[in-house]
Image: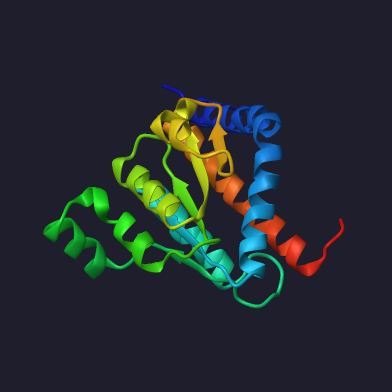
Length: 197
């Protein structure tokens, strides 16, 4: 096996996946930026959840908003529902792992807030449960998925935004998810700060 050739193919495949995704995803990403910005400007917040690599993405996104992305601006209200081990383990132990995000959404979410629900397959039961809780709380949902969107794609309301990566390979989906999160951060900053370029 030629490792350099294999690594080169990984880079090429990643780049091709991103280029193929831009036509499919640019408009809904812009819609999600506008939704999130409107919520933040109305004293709302963004709650983010996911499992595994998607949990890390939820934390990454919340950190970029709460601290800063590439431009100086005031901190923005964003919470990753994946970080409080005491909360996560108590819910999983006392109830069910399916509820680890939904109970937090029911406690913290308010009408007009946004749930960023991340699942590469679109079928994560606890993310699905969180979306149901967000709908109950009259929150907006931005779903970041792949592989056709799975069950999440089927349950979103007409006012939700579905950012579905047109790919089936988990690694490629996750790479586009990270780029998408950076696009969301950049777009929010630009709208809030009035950047025209």
